[in-house]
Image 1: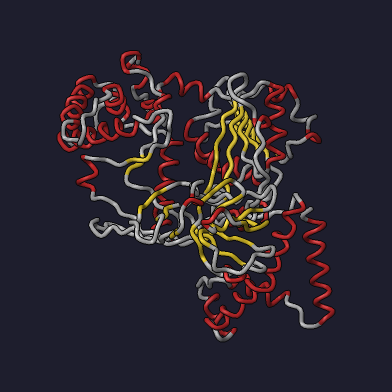
Image 2: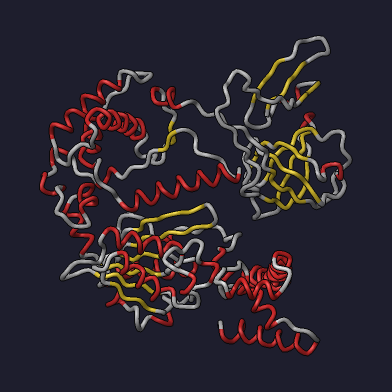
Length: 561
């Protein structure tokens, strides 16, 4: 926190800045915590962005305390309930007993420990008694972006991989050289062409002199880009496409912070050094894998074809994995290679917006079988078997040690920690590598677990999940904490969403005769199917209400179970 201090009424003020409350504040007679706005009046605004919502933290308070003569309010959370806040963030309070003037007020905090933070001067407030909840408040924030012309010469970039902090700048120089090469020759560099690679290096060396600061050019990266300019690595392009679409959504909705200026993502570890690469490794063969071969070489392409992969789960991540498997040619070898998938779930309507292998006519069909068929349509050469089994102790007669020993890699696309721990234990016993991924809203993680090289999934314990995956809510609850969310979702659908849709439909189309005429003429009326279902099933008396409730009970607790 920043504060002014003075030792007498006539002495000048001095400004000191600390990340925490300084321990020597008791020696001062007067204190003031200023709330000074930070202005960017000299900066030109190229874009603005309102960070108004997003992830909200909540802390249940244990007590307030006073510290020294500074009369600084220290907020302490309940045991085993860290606040997960950062210095400079804002919170608002409610349900506080005693210090009631805090209720509804917003304060900027200074973090003291994972379980406590300071809110500044509370000397003029009544004594605190007990209770209270602190909720994080997102304050709108203006972001400033520099023009492209300036950023080309003096790039500000994000570091995606801290093991290679120098890579973004080197890739930036190489990309500038590629753009200039394309403008000068009206084409991309040819695959394996030494002359084109040398020309790219000359351009890069020339461009590096125009950048602010003296930067050495990594000629290997420039040569790699020259060789791979006509290639495409499916997982990398999918990641960049996802990031780009996420930025569009941020701009449209005004939610979450945008990326600042440049972001370069690379997979340089897959690339062979130019002097060690054989030209025939990367030359086109006239098949669907030419763009991939340009990037990783034919030897790796053959290894991918001969892989045996076991994928567990065919939801959002599973669909993405299967698409990448098909584009990479995984499991397409003539003598070896197969993809095996399993998922016991059926396709729900709510799955369609993110599980892109499924279509409306697939609803209530098995995910695994449908995903397998869709994957074959992407790459008919892939060998893929689908199952409807859970992977758990009850199915160890199917997924036994022999089954795991035949696999080259296990890939999980699960929505709960317990299943991940079980799969990890089987991979550990069978010495199989595991690729684990997960998502929660806009957040995601990927973890590669290799026997004898990395720690296993069970070696670390994550805190209990506070959020519930949306796909879990839409299917039948598998844990006690899911039941409330599931029941609330069903209640909202039956007593809010469907009635609202019904009323809106008849406001748009006032008469049944008009609706029938439009349907007969072949016009598609949005919501007509749901309205027809409501008309046929809506109860008109108490007995029919009981009958409908009984049918719903049978549907949810018998058929779906």
